Image 1 (cartoon, rainbow, N blue to C red):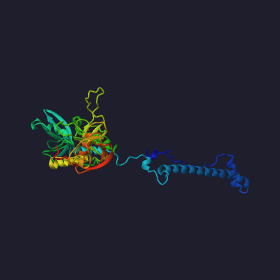
Image 2 (image 1 turned 60 degrees about the horizontal axis):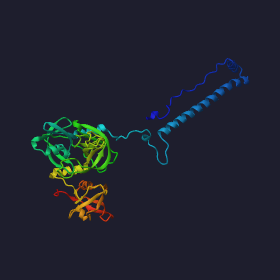
Image 3 (image 1 turned 180 degrees about the vertical axis):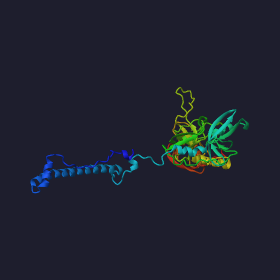
Length: 415
């Protein structure tokens, strides 16, 4: 509501003027009073109506002044609300004016679109499309491992990669390295430069309810922007890749921004257009008949790899061709009863052995992550950097609860 409509409109008031009396009975008295000044009674008779008019005018003026004062007071109260205790209510709060940093989808889209590309994978004449993120001006691209896994596992002549940029330019793309455990892959475009790298943010302090924007190529539709919020954090996601490869899982950002096939490898950004996640997976709806075939299309359950984890993995892949992950050195069952990860193997010399974990112990928490089964324990460890100290909540084989400390090792050379 604008200030001009906060209350009644104050209209300007006309002045009040007196008028000469028109009563013929009065005019002779006035004439006689001027002609015969010694006739005091006639003079007093003529003056009394004048005094009465003056009194009425004064009273009317006081009434008008009082009304104006009351209206002005009301306007002042609306513009400067009365303080409550030692605090006053800001005018912006009363008038519901928007925050100047309010979420602008247009500005975010304009900033991010040049930094998100379409990856086209040509397989037997039928192109598959996904998304990628520009990391450097000279053409370094990050995407998901599962995007490039199919083509990378086949002979070179059976498939080729091409990148389509937001401005319509195209360039060939070569895969540099992949990490199935984190579902991250990096590659480089050829014969092109002057690209716009994405602005890297942080996933360390994300909040549930925070607005986010997803950018990518769902269903082959390049440059698609969808908007939502972060609906949950630390969701365990295990991407469906080559079953012969080692277990891959990560703790993901959950969002209700629409993610569809083809959004994989695209960007999830915050209100400043800074990258906070790499879109990686979406949950499909399972039919009520129990056929097990999920419907394609967004149902508001999408998942993204946190950028802090993805950026570290990408840097290691670029530097060495390999990525390292936290290693606990314990195997656990996926039984749902009892609730937790029941230790089945503890490797000699491992961080788990150094922390005093034994076969039969039940791990229920790693730092702030609730552990429900063995896969969650493995994912919680490998989502962290080697050398990270962690706290484990454990119920030992005798049923006694305890808290132990461990420093994660590295899984490099143990695959």
